[in-house]
Image 1: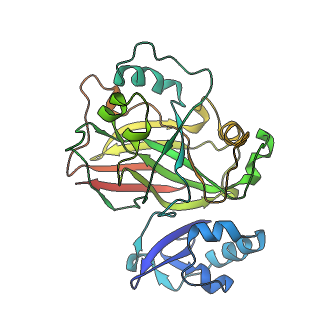
Image 2: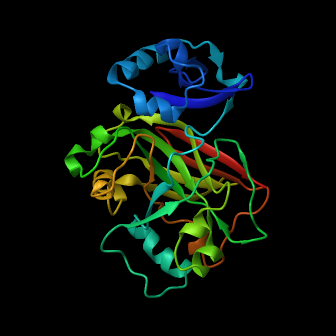
Length: 294
């Protein structure tokens, strides 16, 4: 089941896509909830019966055509900073060493975690304002996003699936000069607008666990990244368990699980993003997240 946040007749709402993707059923109409309920609020209060009712509704034609709405990020304003995993593919290690100009950088023994401030998360087809005045080395990173579904702490890997609400496509846009300059990754990852996610949240029941899915990016139609989450150095059960040890995860929290090789930073002659470029990040079971840089 695919859940969507959208704007229709000037109002932000949440819904579930019909199976053919052409129409939307509003969550408020199915469950009798407030029309202005946000995705985060729904995740915080949902039950299994709610999901079952929505899944049944998705099998029928909805009342709103998708072509009549503006699709937003499923979670436009996160409750906390995004939790990110750095260098989670072996193929990304060498290009990270190259791009950060740090020959001492090695494959990490333990996962690298960092926060990404996202005052607002951009949705599909949103234009992203590049801050080329601050850093002309703007880069893309296609990733799988994991959305936490219930409050949890100290969770064993084998119990993590029950903590997950669903998955989305994530673009961890990055300013590489700032990333190098500050010797850590928060500032280079956190410029306004440099976080995009969507087009939907796919509920966890739609995919086997641990998830194995292709992660792809294209710039102006040219494929730049193509890998699969089965090649993670630390898989989703390991990541969720690791982060939960001594740190509470809450419903609506977003975990970006790392990007594969193919980013501009790793190229001998980097193809940095520039105004007019169209970036597509795709995870086939979930969809395509497309944004234009301006």
